[in-house]
Image (cartoon, rainbow, N blue to C red; front, side, top):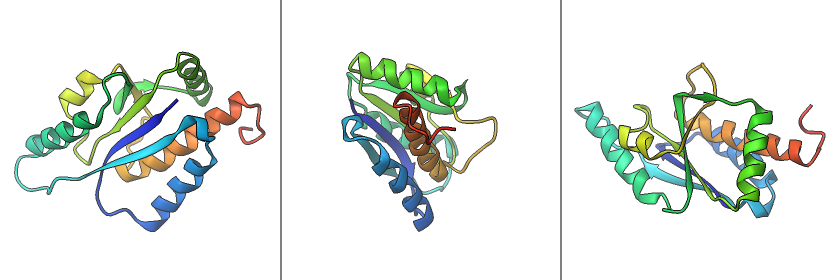
Length: 153
């Protein structure tokens, strides 16, 4: 099973990169967790146009057979236990997952339309670059639940 995190990005602080790498490396190789970064558009002019161009680039990376999940503030709130259940179901079904993370303006309407699910990490708003760390940690935590590993206590 592949899990790909497709994200709009710009300059990443080292502590964000280190946090992401720490949790990504903890995931077992059979999850094949991969980060694909799309450079953020310059924030000049129409914000809707910027979001649209970034969305087009994200959509171009999606594999047709992959299950697409948009990380969106208006998505469903999942507990870690629910994420673990989804992870198990996706693995059992042989599903590959593409997780979409927008830039500062969010995901384009076309990205949201393409998504089969929408996942909200919180009612709080997080910097989009921090989302990669949160997602990697939550995937590791969900895996630890499935393995009855003591990490999730």
